[in-house]
Image (cartoon, rainbow, N blue to C red; front, side, top):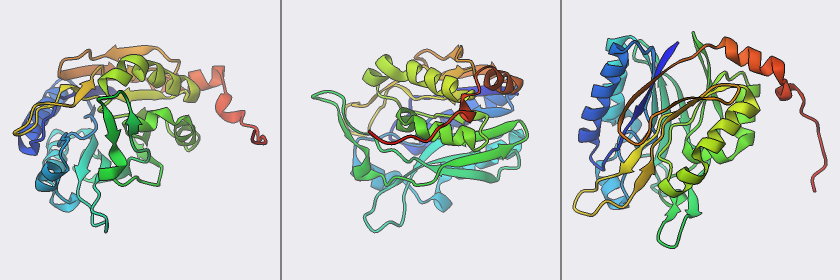
Length: 277
């Protein structure tokens, strides 16, 4: 399977973001990719909850989802929409951060809501409270495709290895980690964490990422993402690194490598119960 990681630098304008995303998805298909992956919050990055309430939509009304489903069908490809920021009908008004796997007929095959919320103090000037605006999911998801089983995650999930172990033990061959990873934590941890998740599980890890400064309407850009979309093999080798510019990165997946890595180190079968400290 030839896959393509789409690296974006989106703004808080979903319409403009969609134009750029569609163009890259089409280029990826023209380049021979049968599986195309976009980053976390493909439709909108904003530091303003008011702006999000203005431009975000419910899943059934979201123009980005509808358009990208149509693209997948027109191109005959599998498409992972890394995630969309979506309105919900929760009483507290919080949004969902939801990943979608779209089949080549344009239908939604699987959905995954980000479980772990990015509530961190990166520095004195960069404080994030994702759970203030987004409600966490509570269900791990593995989806079937003709080329392998896909375990779906999003960004900050990457720091919780038990989730990835559960996805691999649940049949996952390919783990997806669409992200908008912070530029400070990304420089320190991004590659190491992705390689660790691949090594621990014997899975391919595909991590399409946001990159650079994210423009905001009527305000200076505040958010910066690390970039460096990565593809990692089951033995831990980095197969591709997209650097820091928006664009496409292609990689070929040989799923036989999953079986070979797990045969060499069958740690997924070696769990033992133990008493807590």
